[in-house]
Length: 154
Image (cartoon, rainbow, N blue to C red; front, side, top):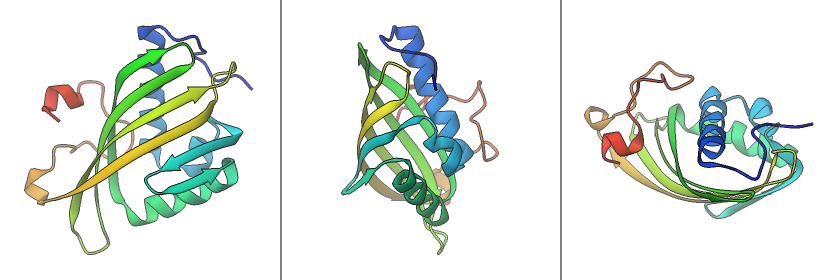
């Protein structure tokens, strides 16, 4: 199965790959998101490790049960060959109504078919007031005219 754009990446194709990943995660559909990864994909997410699509699906399902009203923006940081570096922020609230903005960086490595074989994510959570939120689009894909992280000063 091929998942364009394929490496080696250009600035244009790396930017496209980042936006496709953002769109997938904003769908909050663990099965659909998992199809962007190799069957043996290896992840480090904060202090947990996932190996393979089944663990990725379980992880994402749990994540989105706990991180309610999740909205994410990703931005290309760098790229070379089959690797992409991304910075991101997402907003969510917990079951008690406390809002957070989570900031992070990811390093991605892709196979020749454009599937992600490695993902390394470092993430920090910042409690915020509801009035401090910046991501207000309806849940799902971020509108094309919504400001980027850089535009928002994040």
